[in-house]
Length: 471
Ligand code: AMP
Image (tube, rainbow, N blue to C red):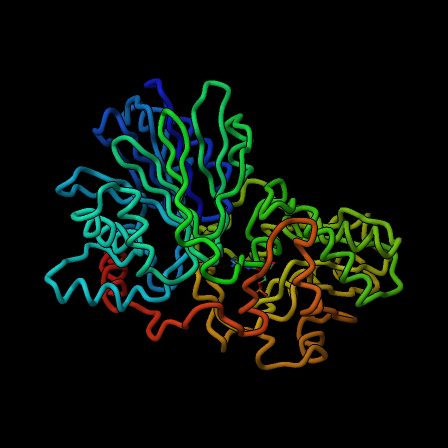
């Protein structure tokens, strides 16, 4: 999921800046998008299912009016939280005022916290963590001297991998969980507006200069007059940045924990080439997230890099086949091999990850059909063995191919000549030029930095999404 916020002295068209900030982070979530504009404490908001460009047009953006601050969100639906009702930001009116909240990631103790509130008579309209967190914050605000202190107190009871972006009538508050599992940074524009984003590429997009990343556990308060920080939760836990940000999630032009994502991916490719060398004629990456790793593999191995697969730029990740009679291979609609680049060649095919194995099998088939004489598959992530509870929709253990098959068997299933995965010990080296001191690698080695949630599927949410489906 992606969050974006802006605050400044002057009232202006902040909604359009948020729109561009979300557009830059569309890769982090395609299920829904929303923006809330703050005009002197009056909040105007709109959110809906769909991509940022589908949810907002000029008319919709202007209907939000001008303001001196705004926040926005693009949502990636995870198990138990899909559905329109879970679109963010959430806007809450409480006795001390009003707040809007957008989140990235997931809590692992949401069910327990929700039940505690329900037993006090609280009712929920959604199954999103954002609603739950906003109620906990408003509850704390009853006795806390400020909204940031309410956030600070609320964070004591939250557990999981999350980033928060909250807007009150006068402040933006940006916070990362104590393990720093999700990225979050801020910068400044020439006109003095502060900008907060999940990924630094969104700061670039709106012409903001990157100031710094928010530290794990830190709460940063941004107002029109400046920035302050609360560090009560910092260094309370061992850092556990989601390493999948480097592998797949983040854009290559973002910097995460001080390490450019493209550099991390190229390093993955180079480490892969060292661990799994092969005699071949060309290295081809699977667009988009396999491209930089392929470049790293090519540089390290000395095998030429080639553009052997073209991705249709107009297809989002949510592409839906328009009719049941569409018999074309879905992968072929998205990706087409460049026959002249692979024909008669021994190809090293680099993808960022193998989850169920379906994508790899199809691409290997496409390359062979285009004339590749050999296809050597390389994954720039180690085998996927465990589900993620922190907001990445990695499937159930059963669906993960590496849980049921050996590397040799997977190689045979996907139809490759050889198969090599990034070694687990190498995954810790991806961000080595940055400042991260520890990673969450649970999807690869099962070492979860938090308790595992007892119940991950919410029956209430199931009902909501079923009723929405029938509409
Ligand atoms: P699969 O076909 O199930 O093996 O999926 C592998 C492909 O899914 C790779 O090409 C990845 O780029 C992509 N992928 C990896 N993680 C995710 C994710 N969390 N959501 C969507 N796609 C993903």
